[in-house]
Image 1 (cartoon, rainbow, N blue to C red):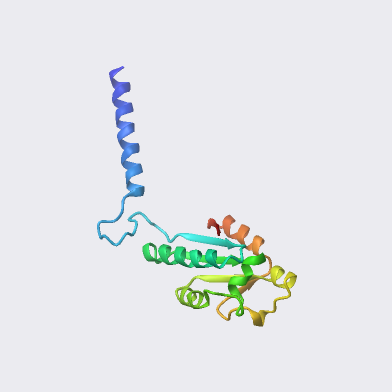
Image 2: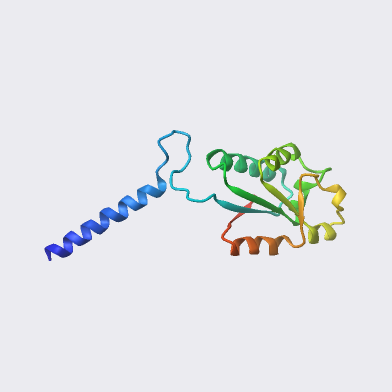
Length: 152
C-alpha cells in the first residue's frame, strides 16, 4: 500500500508541475509565454457588418500580436462581414493596413462579393481574395490553425 501511495503522490506532483509550466509567464515581464515552440496560427471568421465588432477585432489582433508577435493570423470576411473590407464602408481601414504590414492577411470571400454585387475594386487594396471563405477556413483548420469566430 505504501508504494502505491508514493506512486500516486509522485504522479500528482508531476501533473501539477506540468500544468503550471503551460500557464506561467516568462520572467522577462513582457507578458510572452515561455513554452511556445512554434508560432501560433489563428484564423478568424468575420460575418457581421457591426462596426463595433470590427473595432473589437482590431483590438484583439493588437492584443495577440503584443504578446505573441510571431503569431500567424488570417481574417476571412464573408457575408455582411465583407463590409469591413469595403473601401466605402470600412471604419478600420487604417488598422487593416497597419496589421497587413505586420503580416496579418485579410481575405474577402468571392462568393459573398458576387452575391452582394461587390467588385474587387471596391475592396481595400491591402485585402486578398479567396473563392470560398468557409472552405478556406476548414482547410486551415485541417492544417492545425485555431479557429476563432469574431463578433458579438
